[in-house]
Image 1 (cartoon, rainbow, N blue to C red):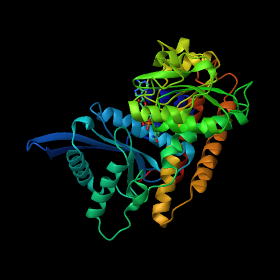
Image 2: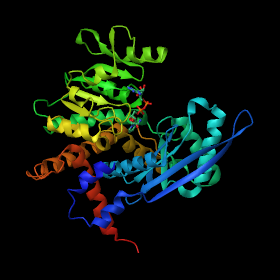
Image 3: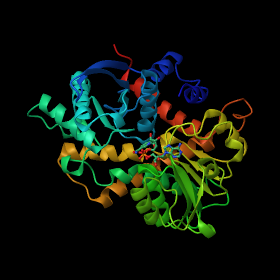
Image 4: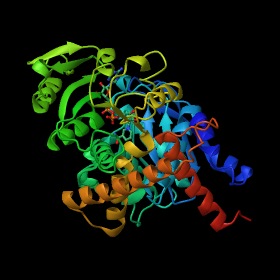
Length: 423
Ligand code: NAD
């Protein structure tokens, strides 16, 4: 994050340096200790975090992740990413992130519920529908969000508490289309980029050859959306391996999903050839979508990437060194804060519906998502094309990621100046 921020900052020489420092740093970090009675009667302490990076544009917004590697540093970086993302796609939220260092695979459902309730109780009024609104992230899901809501609701009786958390089950005010939003938003992003002639020689998705790393929420939804718009998804992968369609055909995605549901992996789907994740990243294709983990395309393997455009479904899948190498070869990277912002756009839709006690149709949610993504792409492309001709020779970064970051940071700087530094 610091590297990305520094690249954007170099374009913002007119903004007061102290203000830029303020925009980079988190506003507030909370560390909580959570004693949990385990099923065997023992007591185990877990450490939880919640970082509010910015509330300049509205309440903090960001997921809660449960993973053994969760640290304050990681949560802080991801909270900053949320600030830039929300500013870029113009949802009226700031950035936040939370997490607990734990291994959900070794916890029973009861232990997980007690851990979640204790965490939310400890955060108290540091989260709330108008202050900081959590959502699901790595190893947390709608079921965990239901406990988040219920705990907060027990602590605040008599209020409309539905908007305190998004990504809830449908029965508890979750929005239509939230599960597909990020993958669909990726496809909307690329389609718009092609429509505005972002990639010479490719103006539409029809017939495009697509490879997708990761076949989870984001990868699956993106794959189906690509298929529905006439593209050919030829390869997908998960943590246990990848597959390539026989005879260069498009994959039968429903067959792949059914195989994964049964076997736990896409590998071995009938009518496909098994490949490694490295093979998938090196496939000759039009579009490569890393939609699994961070740091997947790096200085060690970027030389083998043969896609014409990279679409970041995951957060930070391309390292800064790989960014530079791809830029030098003229391969555009549609960056995470733009490409995977569909999730937060539909989270915002859920929050609005909860406040208004409405339930939008799937068509309304899709239309809202499309409009938000199209206008964000247009703003980023305008910035990108507006970089001075001598910027690159002056050592400034002029890729799409930098354009997106400049757009986001500039907006936050303008809002801060208009509000006036307090007191
Ligand atoms: P998920 O857990 O549903 O899916 C992740 C997928 O990645 C799984 O198929 C998993 O098997 C695969 N995977 C794990 N390790 C892998 C490896 N080494 N090689 C190849 N595949 C591997 O998660 P998700 O919700 O789809 O999120 C994917 C990424 O997108 C994450 O980086 C997440 O932070 C980011 N993201 C998600 C959302 C969202 O709304 N879900 C929004 C923004 C960003």
